[in-house]
Image (cartoon, rainbow, N blue to C red; front, side, top):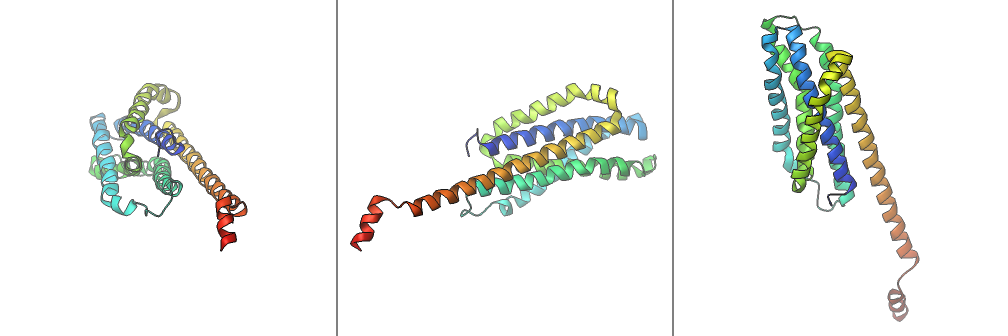
Length: 225
């Protein structure tokens, strides 16, 4: 799998989107917690992010042997299998953001229920961590370039955070992030699916061409037999 392959570009796009949205979500949590709870609890966003991302990555780590595709699978089938798993977690992460907004409104603003805030807030990070771990697992030999896309996404998030919060507010900003993640993930999945179908069709056409136009040596051997 070359570094300029469509699959590698797919990984870069997904990783950039996840990194961008994760930082935005983490920083938005600091504002949400300072309003829903007290401002002293805004620091919880950092520990929640580490917890959710770590658990998601750990789950992929203990499953990595089961995630390996059989050796008899073609390259395009292997890439599509990885892309399906990655997109599945990315979409789950995108959907979990509006669910988080919905649930957070029903938790009483009391420090006695702080464990509920912690658990509900960590679910989106879990899905994002699992998706990012799959990206690095899919092409670990290009981890430096993948990490570069990760850093670019995180850096961009810190730049656009304040304008987003000023324009939309924390809740609406999270809904926008959710829409972007789901949209990019869905488009990327259909791109990889279309590529798989096109590649398989070309392979079938090439086989039909070979069978319909046998090589001269094969024709000579057939006559001798």
